[in-house]
Length: 331
Image (cartoon, rainbow, N blue to C red; front, side, top):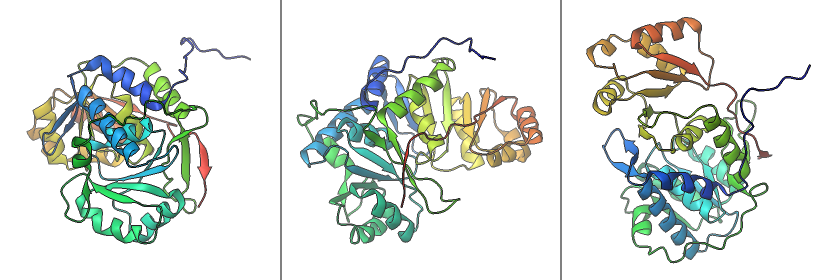
């Protein structure tokens, strides 16, 4: 028996990951794209494009070559899409890395991925400098916030005039890698998953093809962006929506953000939904704007889903099977 979908067939454009995302973001101009829940700092779609172009120019000026690797080792931050898109514009590869990795764990990933540049945060700079002593491929380390031990990413961006943007770089979407995330290591050592431009564009087209989200939707997420779940959510929502991000889940901070930013949707994991269902602090805040709770990365028990929906008065949608597709780079 042949099964056929009632949905229209999706067309996957044969373009680079950078072009696909920038073409969409240009449509939303000065609308706020990202908000840091902790600091209130914001970036518009236009600013993300501008800063990623300047970073691509700076990387090109510093000699970043096609299919070389840039390591991004930070907690959730506004710089995440800027670094990934700026690197992609050079047809280079971003490897995402857990900033809480130990020295040995970071060293193992860098030995395998051989990054040229490392983007990190001030609290991790000392560790990265020690790792760099063991990895000759690393030419420079940049911090997203002030550090006297290494260069500033924002100084690099702001001082570049954009004239070295790699306009003529060639990209083969089907063959060239754009992302190199690593598996968790539950079945052995972590493995690098080589995601092509076409892989990522196809995933975004498929996820967006499930239905267009309303333009007024304001989302909140603490899912780590170095993980496939958080990374995909980040770029799916760069389609005209305001996305409020935080580094980690603290229930008081989350409830304050819901009130302050009138959050409509929250993408989480089962343990967080369990806390929302059981913590009495929820009743002290106005969460009436919240309409949708997303759950993924692990199974959600039916009773937890039911309790969370009743407590938050929100619908729960579960994500299944959004794992990476790509070639494996084994350590």
